[in-house]
Structure formats: structure tokens, C-alpha cells
Image (cartoon, rainbow, N blue to C red; front, side):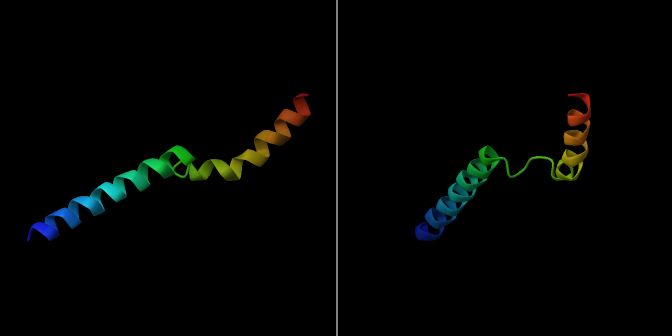
Length: 48
């Protein structure tokens, strides 16, 4: 019983650590933004 509780807590902590790691890596940035980057780069080149 105590082992299950420890395993549950360890799994939860591992999930939180993994989430924070990927959050800092930028994995949860706006996914829709990628398809509009090309248009912004073209506008920047025209204005330069």
C-alpha cells in the first residue's frame, strides 16, 4: 500500500518535471504562429 502511494507521488512529480522542462523548451508556444512566420519574414524583407 505504501509502495503504491510512493509510486504515485513519484510518477506525479516526474510528470510535473517533464512538463516544466518542455515548457521552458518552448514546446507549448503558439502552434498556429509557425504558418504565419513566412509572411512576416517577407514583409520584413520588403520594408528593409
